[in-house]
Image (tube, rainbow, N blue to C red; front, top):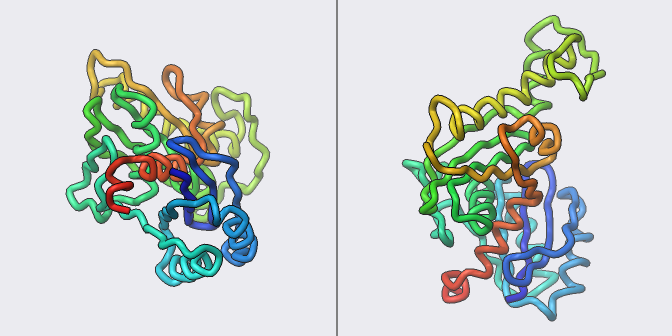
Length: 252
């Protein structure tokens, strides 16, 4: 099934086509650049069988972008929600509607690549860390400020100088900017280590597959315990898995 996938993030949209569970080249744009999105959709409209959309932005922005899609392609747009049934994954939130659809789809993307217990780290504006057992049950996770939010919050409430020069190769901070940057990164790494292999290990005796995505994946990935798999565009990859699933095809 040839699908058009659209991820509406906090500050920009991402667009890709999928055939099966794999995605093609990703196009990125700001929300004022709807014409670019419409042109891209029109150029592929005759090949498409379905359109899937995931959004974490407000209803007005989501509706405007959905309307722009309708002008470019006559297919109905299916919006994926955190309460939807997912292929091979069960959401673990007590109130599933409170789970961000971006987190849910990130887990779907990772789950499609392993049957081991897994941990997904999505390091963007915020950093989310989620754990899924070998049966596909989401156990829960954490939300932390991303590196820039961490830094800005700290600097806004202290007299720490705003020097942005960071020693990227340092193990420990020997200047203030490096200490702040490493603090943010090791906070994430410490959580992953504690719950994957440390004193609060969720899967004792089992090998946990760790996936890392998001804009700061490179900075965090090297600090994680053991090997990890870099998996960018997690939401789009999760949408591709949903589009390829039998449940979606029957629903369509």
